[in-house]
Image (cartoon, rainbow, N blue to C red; front, side, top):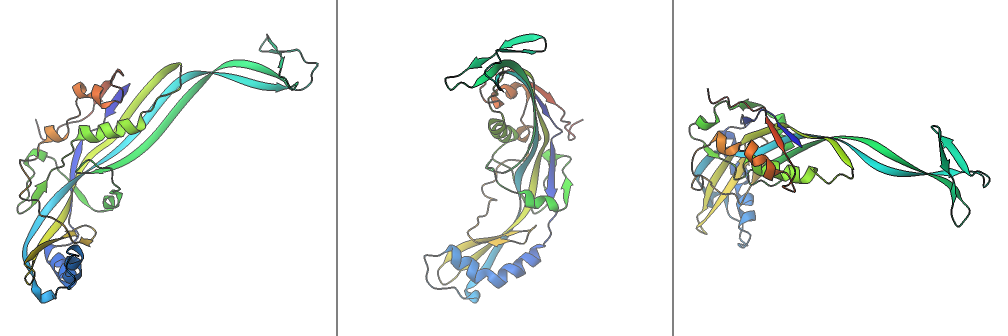
Length: 281
């Protein structure tokens, strides 16, 4: 099996809403957003009892993969061809006499041994969140983005970068486990996986922390800076983020690792990397 890995890329989406707009929109709905997450309290908070404490501007990672699977193989197949007329005892096909057989019901047929020459080409599209969970995040692809040329040095001012917990090898392994299935064949002539796209994206999120004074409770509302969607029950991640982004750690699909990425482990694998690390000379 040959695995062809495309050039690995990183992008960050450009916010479609400013922090000021996010604050204004959340302010109008903060009572319902916060009471919904603190459902144990029957009293609906008054807007004036809820005060904004802090805002976290962050970029959350997710993965996108486009994969092309090409398989060419041969398999043996026996074909049963009906013959009309009990008087027919044999048929000459391609200058070969083939005997006619009859079953218990008197139905006559030819049994032909053949070899099927098969070709399967399939395309797949996947997106994974930063945890490595398959999730439909295609909606974000419509928004403008900018390529991150030097991923190791990417650190916008005032922004928390949340690297993915799942590296490239993790999501590649999940995809290969799903698309590579046993083939009913005597001979596999070609088996190739082209990972045409292996990109990491960072999308902007604002986390607004509020304090409900009368209940002395904290609550965080997350505002999607691309779609404008709001949701209570969020969290601030600045205290959980450790270390810097590392291209080598994120894009860790190497020739040495290729063998363990393919289900079965015993399959001989050749990895062809077309990746160019633009951050290094």
